[in-house]
Length: 282
Ligand code: 13P
Image (cartoon, rainbow, N blue to C red; front, side):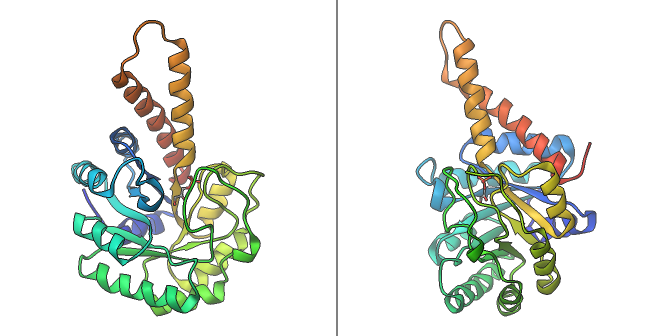
């Protein structure tokens, strides 16, 4: 069934877990996430990063599949816009039926980010949808190239508290040592910063850049207030590697539908492993 981000984060808060928010670009990815979540009986977030992934599929083409499969799932499913770039993009997602949007004004000066986020909160409330926004920066766009975290961009808890009070958002994306994509060196996370931000803002913290974080660091982040974890690159990378291996092992014809099935198999395994860590399951 379709639910808002606020609703799944309430479940996460009550159970002291984090909900996986998986970026999607294909039907196989959507099916893999939902099958994994249903098998584990866990809520899940399907998300689309239009700014980064529109070259693979348009928002208008992937949204109906995300919403239809999410709606008939046996577990709570939030359908979320990741890194919404502007009002027009946010409105497109809300008009399509997304139950949650992120507005990412983190690269803008504080006052403009706060004012724009407030406008998005007002707009989303007309659709009964939730809003995530960002203070501090992990880079405005997601990419698979990755990099290293820049401490000067880490989220300041005092500014974060002011931002949440002024905007009324449901969840806050924070910078505390993660980056999008493949890490160039092992990430060093400022866990204490998460706890301070959680305490002074009163809203759930969102981790971006979940690929490449150790199980132990995931657990520490969750214990300190992370309730939504964005994860994409490793699911795509592992599926790509699996397809490559299958192709190398194949003799004779290879049909594209075989490739789609291999992709689904690999992604489902990655999502099961990942949701188990986030939900503290054996
Ligand atoms: P990764 O691709 O690094 O897992 O990050 C995903 C993300 O944060 C999307 O916003």
